[in-house]
Each structure stands twice: as structure tokens, then as C-alpha cells.
Image (cartoon, rainbow, N blue to C red; front, top):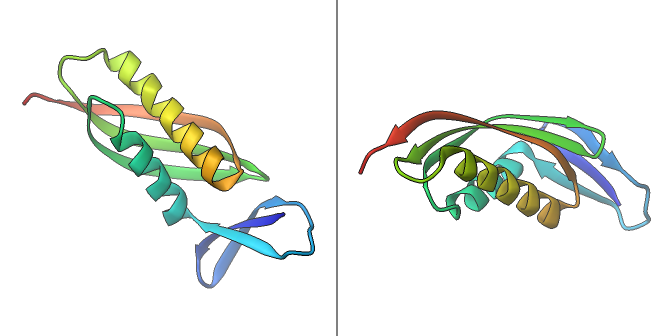
Length: 111
């Protein structure tokens, strides 16, 4: 499979290359971010989340996220669940390897 990350329609940055006769699969940063946002939204205790950066090297993806968590649950445990949810979703849906998910807890939401 030949995969590339398309940052916009005019600029394409190669992410993962494996030559096959079937062609190319391209992922925009928006797609990787949206997969991550949906996965993180399913984690209990997440009030809001924003993707702050996506870095690619070959088939590897590093992501950084800013989040606001609900007050009460363990902040560390919730952050670890966010990391796991994003990593699993991106890898399962794209075939890319997520090497890092950095979670920056910016605030706590008190209901």
C-alpha cells in the first residue's frame, strides 16, 4: 500500500510507502484529527479536546492534544485513556503507527 498525508489539495507529504499495484491511499491531517477527536470524545471525563499538532515521519504519527477534563475522575487515568483511544482508532482506521499521543490537560470543567 502506498499512503500519503495530504495537508491540503496542493501540498502532499509522504507518510508511508509500500508500493502496490492498487494505487495510493491519502490521509489529510483533518482526517487524522477527526478520527482522534471522535475516539477521545468516547472517553468518560473528557469535556473538550483539540488537536494541537500532528507530526509524521514515514509510517509513524505523533500527535499532541489539548484537553479540558471533567472535575472528579483521575486526571492521569483519563489522559491515559485518551492516549489509548486515539492510538487504537488511528492505527485501526488508517494502518499508520501512532508512536506518541501527548496529552496537555489545559483545564478542569466543574459541572
